[in-house]
Amino acid sequence: MMQNAKTGAQRASWSGKWAFILAAAASAVGLGNLWRFPYLAAKYGGGVFLLTYLVLVLTFGVSMVLLETALGRRTRLSVIGAFRFFGAKFTFIGVLGAAVPFIITPYYCIIGGWVTKYAVGYIANGPAALADGGDFFTGFISSNVESYLWMFVFMAAVFIVVSLGVQKGIEKANLIMMPALIIMAIGIALFTLTLPGALDGAAYYIVPDFSKFSPELVINALGQMFYSLSIAMGIMITYGSYMRKEDSLTSSVTRIAGFDFGVSFLAGLMIVPAAFVALGSAEAVAGNAGPSLMFIILPQVFNTLDPSFATVVGFLFFLLVLFAALTSAVSLTEALVSIVCDGTRLSRGKSLTITIVFIVIVGVVVNAGYNSLSFIEPLGAGSSLLDFMDFISNSVLMPIMAILTCVFVGWIIKPKPLVDEIEISSEFKAEKAWVAMIKYIAPILIAAILITNVLPFIIG
Ligand code: TRP
Image (cartoon, rainbow, N blue to C red; front, side, top):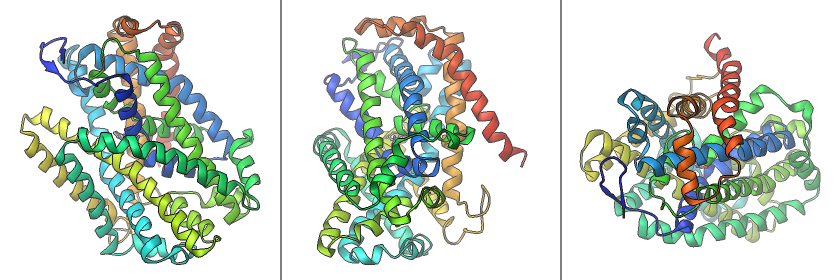
């Protein structure tokens, strides 16, 4: 138990540094790594995206996670409270951050539903049915009954876990599922690399072709980084608020970012070369890469195996994606419950009910974007409501939140209090670089990218 810096209230804390790292890693590793990262890498030129992403994670990503965890540990408050701590007029930054998971969670559950459907599909329909080049997938998401059903199945699993409380069940489950996930990912990556033509795909994924570099690539890499590391939405502030003063912030943060990057890298290594095998050329891979990559191309690759083997590999693959999705969806929902709780002062039970009603309603509307409401194409022809939600949170709100956070710490409260906080538990060798990052590099860079990418949508 620890004292809150302002109110002196008792507050729970992690049992140790590793409990924090595992919890943060389990919430960070999710659909972002397994579903979103590979399709972005395939779409934006492979190696050049991978390299840009890595550079962003090592510089800006690590700096932001460090900033947020230090802010949380310093104030011992979660996102809204942490900003309000320095003055009521800063509350809005916290509110903006808190809004982001409200946008993400409903559509996260839709994709969770797709993953559930596919895991079950390998058993119920068999590997050939799922590998029909896209009709199965399109038929499923555009159905007026089935697509909703699987979304509800996924949501129900999430709501049950959250209503039971996270600690005992989910933390133990993480301990088994996370290592299993890594082993499976390595196994499948090795397998796809042995397929004929896969090495060309691996080269596309790893060797950067700088002619494919673009500002659009950078904003997508940046948005992906926020999403995958769960930054610029207050989650890491909350996690940091539970951390003990004696555990090193710098080393925890590097481990979390390293682990998260490692899983994304592996996911790309299993999916991008597989897409190459199925589609044949870099152009075809880039042209076909989108949210459906995992659901259309990968089953075609699995289907080249002996049928019973394909069933097992396909099932295990989607089961592991499902585990990763569940742990993240649980922690997203948990975050919403605590925001509603703090904001309304209602009981946890009532806050959970409000959260559930919200997720279900928004989930239904966004899912309708693939069927009854498919005429709505918010980002141009072929785009869906889900793409729109993803764009608003990852490419618009999170960059804005990140700029505000950097300006707040760099110029308003000044980096000193957070540097002191970091130095309580470890030496801070990169202090100068970190301060330069927070004060100048990050805000200017993100603002530039944001303007070049979002403006075209606003002015048409
Ligand atoms: N990082 C998660 C992923 O990669 C998604 C996510 C975004 C998340 N924000 C979060 C998970 C907040 C838990 C809490 O899939």
